[in-house]
Image (cartoon, rainbow, N blue to C red; front, side, top):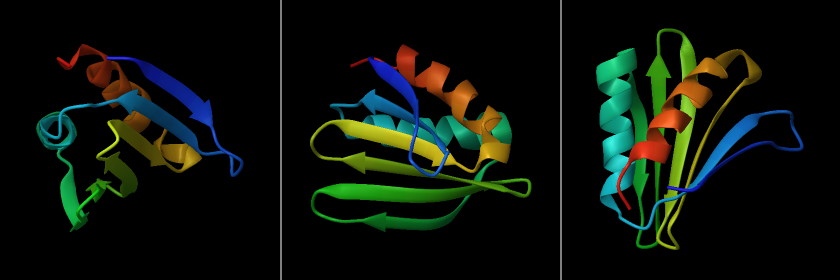
Length: 95
């Protein structure tokens, strides 16, 4: 899976990945639950996108997945470890 790490205009580290299969968002959330003890504090699903807001200890991260095949993961600068570690997992998910 192709992955790009970038900093947005607000200084947040974002991981962007090609995720053409809808299940890849669910797999990432499951991974975060297993490996980091994350729990979902908000989830929204629409006809063309999904969003999860997760809490790990006292940190929050957000995942967006669009039906165009894009998936992004981001959090505040103090949460960068929660972005870089799962980003490596995104690279290993099957397309």
